[in-house]
Image (cartoon, rainbow, N blue to C red; front, top):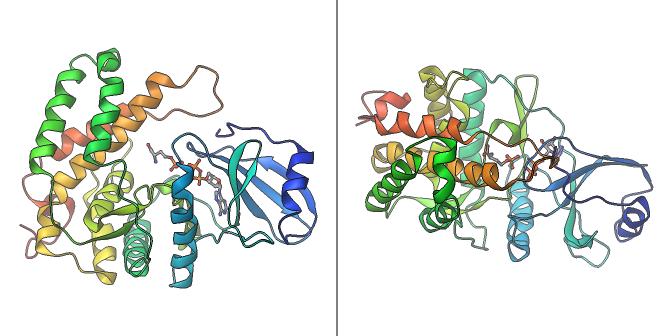
Length: 325
Ligand SMILES: Nc1ncnc2c1ncn2[C@@H]1O[C@H](COP(=O)(O)OP(=O)(O)O)[C@@H](O)[C@H]1O
Ligand SMILES: N[C@@H](CCOP(=O)(O)O)C(=O)O
C-alpha cells in the first residue's frame, strides 16, 4: 500500500476550501501504487483523487506533469485532469507535501492482460506520443543512462546480497549500454511507466492512462520497449510473442515505427529492463521493514534483461519478418 503521508480530516477540509468540489463526504487511502500517497475522495459531487507527492517526485517537475495531463486530455487522450484551485494554481500543499487533486478515471487495471489488451495498449501509447507533440514544457529523462549510473552507485556494494555475481554483471551491462545506447531516434514526450497498473479498462475497452509522474522527453521507441517488458512477459519469465506482436501492431496502427527504431528495440529493451531493475533494487535494499508499500521484485527485471541480451533480430519481439531486421 502506498500511503506514506497521513492526512487529518481537518487539514483535508481546510485544503478543499481552495477548490470548487462540493462538500467532502468521505476519504480513504488507496492501497496501490509505489511512488506517491493517493486518496480517494467522495464529495457531494464527483469522486476525486488526491495525490501527495513523495520522495522521487521533484516539486520543480510538477508543472510538467500536471500541464502534460491537461495537454494530453485536450488532444484526445483519455487521462485524469488536474483541478485548478480558486486562485488558478494546480498545486497546493497538504501535510507538508506538494498536493494536487485530479479527476477520477473510471475503470480497473487488468491483473491478467491478454493479447487483445496489449494491442489496445500499443494504440494508446502511440496516441499519447502523437498527442504530446506540441507540449511546450520539456523534462529530460532523469532515469536514463546518467540516472542509472547514480542509482547503481548507491546499490552496487550490496547487490550480491540479492544474487551472487550481480555486481559484476550489472557493471558490465551499464558499460555495454553506454557504448550502444542510440543517439538519434524520433523523440518527444513519453509516459515512461506504462505498466498494467497504469492502464484502466472498462470490460475489454481501454478507458484511459494514469500516473504521468515519470513522463519525460525521450525516444518514443524506448517507451515501446518499456511496454514490451511490462506487458508481454508471463509470470514464468517467458516472452509472449503473440502479445508482443499485438502491442507492436497496435502501436504501428497509430504511429509508424521507422527501421532505425525497430533495429534499436533490443538495446532499448535492455536499458528499460535495467532501469526498472535498478529502481526496484534500490527500493529493495532501502525500504524500511514495515513500510506500507509492497516492494517489487528486482529479479523479475534481471530475467528480462538477460532475455533481451540474447535477441539477434527484432522479429523475436513480434515484428513481421518483412519489416524487421
Ligand atoms: N485518476 C485516477 N482515477 C482513478 N484511480 C486512480 C487515479 N489515480 C490514481 N488512482 C488509483 O491510485 C492507484 C495508485 O496511483 P498511481 O498514480 O499509480 O500511484 P503511484 O504514482 O504512487 O504509483 C492506482 O492504481 C489507482 O487505483
Ligand atoms: N512500475 C514500476 C514502479 C512504479 O510504480 P507505479 O505504481 O508508479 O506504476 C515498477 O514496476 O518497478
